[in-house]
Length: 562
Image (tube, rainbow, N blue to C red; front, top):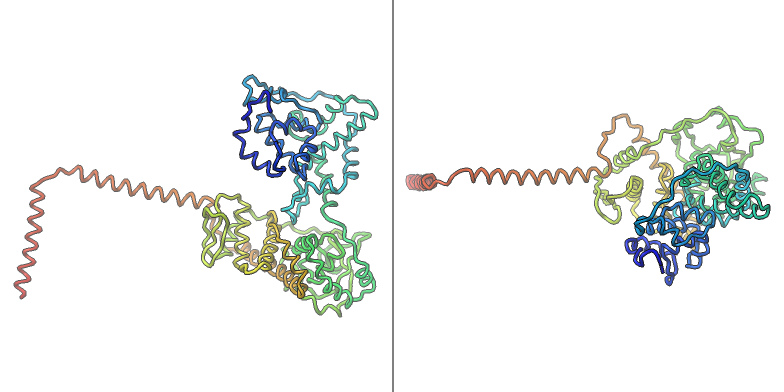
């Protein structure tokens, strides 16, 4: 129970607390104050409350404690990094919401201390020694196909947790040497890793850490592929028939989640390879990259580097790809048959060559993407307050009040679903796969996949046939979509710029309000006009008389006619 903070200090943050505590065991009595008081030992505290992966939750817990107690986040964060115990009085003294006399600590520059500890050496050593389980805790489950390896991880939590490991290692070393003092080491640590305000990392240190993360996370995010001894022997013997049979017989390999993810990531990098060679490449490399025969690289004015390592694939008359635009000139060979008579020849990855660079494609803005998707749809697109975006034969109904990326992702999914309505789980999985490939191409986060479908395919008698069909359709549909996209992108007629994604709803509402206002004004004007004209009984009688005479005239005419 708090002694300085009021008992109901969490009342205003009950929704945030409910969201946070869903990760704790039911009987846990977790409070913002308890989180802050245990910041120096937050891992142990969270584990005691039933949290399975505290490394992924402690940042969110600190943010909740900071906002609820109205305490600067840096105070809790520094206690975590330096493993210094906080007290309720320390927190109450800086809580302006609950303490009228609270005073925030002055912003002061860090003391100019000579840094005698080799923190860089400590950082490099930790990157080598920390187990794979440390990095795996911060890996995101819902982002499995991103091009940027750092996007696969919760980088903020990872960075903070890594720095705590650095501080723990620092303390262990100075305790053994008994110099410098713990306070001097703390000042050196803060001066090396943080700017003077202690809120942000130093630019140079952050760049150093991110560069190290790139190399380390790349190694942890892609597992090394161990070439099967049977396939290795077949490749050494250049046994075309045996290699083709091996690939077909082992199609079940691609129902494993990691292998299927590698396959999806390879689609846009292997447009010049047949499906057979694409799979054969992935048996020899953990990640696919642009791979060609020597004569193809020579045509692009590139030569092999010294010590280049070959990859052995089928030599084939595959379709050609425009090196500048990436345009597919001929259809990709998707059949796994008729490779038995083709020779096994060396191919080389682009990283093993040097020479003329390739032109970078111009990035497409979100507005351009939306406009091109709209033209591809050939349907009316409306925004509505619905739970989920949907598509039918006449309209695409997009969920309103979403971010730019979410809107584009929903529109892309609707276009794909329009091509192939989701009649069963396999088609739904194909649509998810195609959408994920295209999201990678357009620089968006990939979508989650239902891998249960792959498990089911593995158990079917004709599972290999269905697996090949899924692989083939995902490649074909992805490439066909990109072809149509390129066609619309390169059209010469100017694209009429329309309102931004959410402005149409706003404009429609404004027009409706304006129309209602005009109707009201018109009625008021008519009413005022009527009220300005005084009532005259003589005029009224005159009008009545005219009407009566008109009726009589009609009657006399009728009689004359008879």
